[in-house]
Length: 270
Image (cartoon, rainbow, N blue to C red; front, side, top):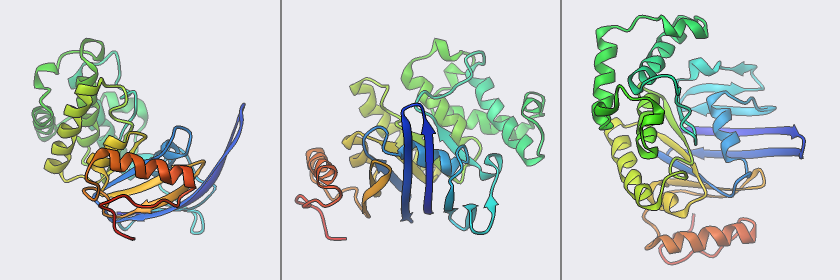
């Protein structure tokens, strides 16, 4: 699914941060795990085209998003990536229905290379409205269609953001800490809901998290990050640990040993 090798350096008031990573995964669900500030979100931003690497390449399936050697840098609007931000990034002045409609208009407008504000006037056809109705039903948020973000709960906002991302039929879905802002019980339920929805839609997933329970629930393949590098890459990870505690112990051990850990019961050599 993803073939990525990028290097970049970001400079800020607190100093500079360097990211130098390479990863390949053909899994349907790839999880990027690691502490805050390790480069996970930056990786997603590069895949989406929101941040540009200094050098390297990003290839999704057979589509080249970025290749510094060949001078390729596909515009963000052309990558057709579904991105659910940690804060969901819903338009507060729009209803749920209008948030979804804007995403569809933006996608149609991207195809015609218009400007941002033309997205408000781009015409939606009956098939577009039907797609919206189907997505509202799939995410079980039809009853919320005329409410604004301030009138719905955190879990409902997550469903809306997910619906908006999936509505454009993305090549890949990027989730940035999707459950971090939810209470523990809702987190458990939403993991199951998101997994069900992804299975129904058949959309590949790249998720970032620092929660071992997310790893245990979603990681077909797993990349462990620290300090702008990948310490370990695990294939066929999900289901190889007997308990979440096994995952937690293993992941903690990797971070402590700088990428070299003894696998707990249930792990095979890669």
